[in-house]
Length: 445
Image 1 (tube, one colour):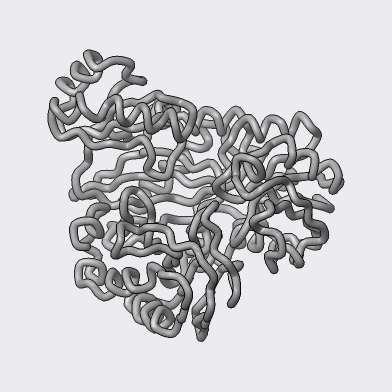
Image 2 (cartoon, one colour):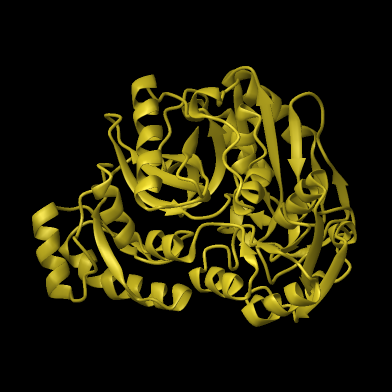
């Protein structure tokens, strides 16, 4: 097992990793930008080093500065968390070239699965259904029109790199395909330094279901059941829950087995998430792999009783999985609400500022993962997440009731938040009856 780990991240996920390391008896080295200087969670690390100014491009995305901090801190491994460099294959390669273990998949597997076109080919090899689409990148308008004629409208133009909904544009007909093709490519180039795009059939009114997997370096892989992430806007998730409501048991088993086949075919190790769309006939289609820990990983932790961060560390240290597929439970139901400093009434505009009053919810089944406190300043430089409200109860109905109670308990003053929208979603009959799709939030509000 490692003696010291550097955490190449900030905020909530950095604190989450520090806590897991402490329970494993591992010392931690934190890094921070000038904007995060003085953050309380840094005091819980054994050491902390400043790696640059507020801009992420000059701090949390600076590979050379992070490696320097790791060498000064004398660590054996680096945990990237999520976001920033978590899915940067070059960073993973540099870590290992520097004799520092990267807590995540190999850079080869990450690079392959990070390219959505390559990931589709692996899925097809593993006999996992994919959305009908182009065989590879489309490099011209003429090629795009030809592919569109073969698979039919509506279509999605999708960036082959990155995530977070960037570089994705719908094309309902030839006119919008011509108009959006260059726009999607330009957005992908700006966001990911890769202008490559491909085409997929646009599955209308789908549910978004993802499967959590763990795979060790000895060929063993398991799934930890599925999460439903259907409640979202512009491909950004708002509510996540497990198990996925209204998913037939046979489909549930098939989709989880498909995820395991896919990661084994890709020679993947560590934690990852296979994402799928499920149509109105309960047919599922693979869309991508997130080669890292997810923001919503606590949902799975609550229903399985598994600490995913600890398992990531154990796998990276070369240990075999400590459990078999048959021994992984799925007890009760769990839900996570992302609470951001954003204004839902004003196109989710970020609301940086100081939290002047903070009252956190509690009670049976309630967990709140956050690094903020009263007096904390939400920075304009990074993601606006205040925290994650996670609730675990015996049934989905109890989870919804408990989550609403917790949302009503919570007080955040000084910045606008997404709490009012979360309440509206959970109170809506479409959500409570599990009849929603990925466009529900945008159509309704």
